[in-house]
Each structure stands twice: as structure tokens, then as C-alpha cells.
Length: 305
Length: 307
Image (cartoon, rainbow over all chains, first blue to last red):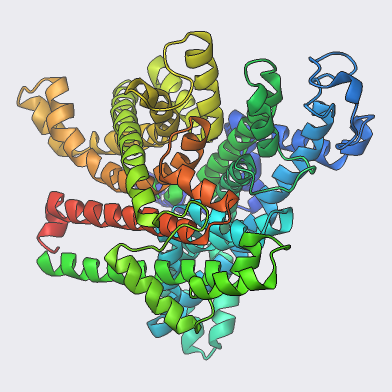
């Protein structure tokens, strides 16, 4: 009898261990739900980001003005019911420009980051899996890109291409792919040694297919986490470039540009620069918290990288 | 060890060459006619032709590249279009400002970051831990220009503690250095906390405590020594973001450093000046990383012994 108990104990322990090992096998939706349950900060951040997205999408419905409409009689007006964030030096409604500026920030956060993810992941997988000369060529180019202070490289590219949102997309994608490639390559090197990749290779699956069907899907958690964590830095880069006057082309509204113009009125109309500045900070903070939350549920080992 | 350092130096030279090539390609090849962008659309054909040959832009690309690269090696980056002085003399005048600013920011970030990180780790999940980690995350998310402007508004304009702009005395460096170091302080604090927490789990820490060392001694003499290795790597990585941030900080506080020179080069469409400042700043970052790597090799016995 005693023996039976012991046996049950062992099988229970075994089951518990199996369960904890299988804990890795959680659906993506399950991970998200767990994050929302356990990490309030990430949930609040996701809601804030959602609000910004709504503001960006429905900007024309939320304000009676357009972003370049000038009310010459009330320039530099303090916040009031008519203009809740006041007006700028050309008499444009600051609230309206904030709404349209959120379009720029969100697009700059998403588009170049997505592009750099795509290229960075593809190059990282190819470099890691193919190896040899391909690997060293790709990684040396990545080394060169990573050697630059990112701001200076982005400035040089913007100088060459000229102002405008499409050029910002190109500049930031060019600046950011290398770090993605480096991380994805490291992951690929690990995956290449796993048994299932080896068995796929041995059973004659072609190289491209191994990379696409066996390696890439296993890099997706890394890529999602990197994606969310790179969004805030892209938003910061755009606002810095626009702040220096080599980002968004006026009169289009960008928060960084608004801060730059508002800087001349810092001592008399501080809200002109502080409101867009605070908006940049809030959205960057929200993406950082969300990224941290996603990393914790999807990919805990990335934490120290 | 010597061999690995030598290999690292060789790699660095290759990367430096790649950086120089990329800058050259971006600035000389892609934008079409540099002279037209520089002189404006309305310059007459004679002026354009004269300027083109004066600057050597009518020569074949490989001749231009050779001139550029051999000049850069000798420290000759050509003459600024806009100012008319040699780029190297302009950079020599600007460099000390950026150096002092970056060093001050780094020292500020390291001291604040490490102290806050250590306190947060020791008081894990305590009030100070949450406070420091919350503030550090705000630090990481705060754009440099916002930190700069808020400091300028509160401490310079409202309280008159520091000058609003310019670096006529040491006081002028204080605000830009804080604004610039703020970001790095946040990430250093977070990293110090997490590595220190890991190290504090090790057995040798218990041993040190058991043999009667005081808590303070254990942390400073035993734990920190090991926890600092990743932090040193991060400091080197941050050199690059410090120089990126310096561009903004110098603009806000009117410090005539390398970053401001690069911004002026862009608004003045001054290609040699832009080339020179970007190449020089990037070379500085690369050199800083090389030194950090060598330091790391020397500091970490596991690497030193070639394990």
C-alpha cells in the first residue's frame, strides 16, 4: 500500500513537471490574456495606445478645424473652450494638430519598424542558416550600420533624401534592420541545431523551405517582442528628426515639429511645446510597457539582452 | 588574449572603412549634383562648373573616393563650403565641447544609475525600488529634447540657477549634461538592478556573509564587481546614443559641439562638414567600443584565460 502511494507520488510529480515544461506551449491569444490578467500596466498601455489609434483614425470627426486652417485673429491663444489646447504662432488649433500629429507618430512607429523587421528577420535567418560567406557579408554590413550613432545616420539619410514622411520611413527602416538581423541570426543559430530542423534537412527539405517553415515560425515570438520594443524608438527618432527640422515637411503636423516651433515660445506659451512633448512621452511609455509585458509572457529569455 | 584583441582591432578597421564608404556613397553618389543643392537652383552654369572642378566633383568616383579616404586618414576632411574654413579646424574647435558634455553626462548617468540600481536591488520590491524603477522608465521614454526643455524652463528660466544656453562657464554644462545623461541613467539603473539581483543569488555571496563581512562590504566588494560586467558593455553601447543625443542637446542649449556642427552642416547644405562630423563622431563611437571590449577582456578572467 505504501508502495502504491509512492508510485502515485512519482507519477504526479512527473505530470507536474511535464505540465511546467509544456507551459511553453501556450497559444498566442492565451499569452495575451495572461498578460492582461497579470500585468495591469501593460493592459492600461494597450488601452492608451488604442485611444491614440482611435484619435488618429477619426481625427477629422473629432475637431471642427483642419490642421492647416489659420485663425489669424487669435494667434498664440491660451487654451480655452474654443481651442482646448490653444493656438500656435500661425493661429492653427493645437488640439487639431495634435490629432493629426498622432497619425504621423503612429505611422512612423509602425511602418518603418515593420519593414525593418521583415528585412532584418529575413537577412538574419539567411545569415544564420546559410552561414559561410553569405553570413559574413550580411553581418559585416550590419556591423557597419550598427557602428553609427543612429541619429547621425538618420540625419545623413534624411539629408540625401529630403524631408517628408516617406523618406522618414526609408531612413528609419535602413537604420533599424541591422539590430533585428543580429538578434534573429543568434536565434537561428540556436534553432539550426535542434533535432526537428536537422531531421527536416536530412529528409531532403529544401533550404528555403526549412528557413520559411521551420525556422521562421520559431522566431516569431522574438520578432513580435522586438517589433513592439522598436516602435517607441522609431517614434522618438522621428520626433527628434522633426525637432531638428529634417523630418516631417511643414505644414504637415508632427509632434516633434510642434515642439521645435513651440520652443521659441517656451517662456511665454509653454503649452505649445509641452503638450506635444508630453504626448510623445506618453505614447513611448505606453509602447515600452506593452513591449515589456509582451516580452515577459512570450519570450522571457530576451529579458537580459 | 593579445590575439583576440588584435583580431578585434582588425575588425574595427574593417568596420571603419565600411562606415567611411557608406557616408561617401550616401552623400556623394545618391543626391545627384551636390553643387546644385548647395548653390540653389538659380546658380548660373559658369559658377556651377567652376565650383564643381574646384571641389573635384568632376573627377571619376574612384579618384574622389581615394582623395576622401586618404584625406580622412591624414585628418584632412576638406574645406567647408559654407564657412570657408577647413573642416578639421572647425571640428577641433567643436570637439572639446562635445567631449566635456558627453563625459559629464556619462559620469552623471553612471553614478546616478548605479546608485539607484543598487538601492533598488537591495530593497527589492520596496518603496524605493518601485520609485526608482518607475522614474527610470520615464527617463528611458523621455525624449532628450523634452528633458532639455523642461530643465531649461524650470532650473534656468524660473529659478535662474543655471544659464539658459551657452557654455561660458562650467555651469553651462550642467543642464545639458543632465538632459543627455537622463536616458542612460535610466537604463543603467535597470540593468544594474537586474544583474545585481542575479549575482546576489550566488553561493559565494552567502559565503562572504557567513564569514562575517558586513552587508555593505559584500555588495560593494563581491557582488558589484561581478554585476558590473554587463553594465560596462552597456556603457559602451550608450556612447553611441550619447552622441546621438548630443546633437539635440547641443541644439537646445546652443553648445557649439560636433552635433550642432552636423545640424548646421545640414541646414547649410555643407557636404564636407557633414561628412567630416559624421565620420569623426562614428569613429569615436567605434573606438570607444573597442576600448570597452579590450577592458572587458582584461576585467573578465573567464575571457582573459580564453575559456
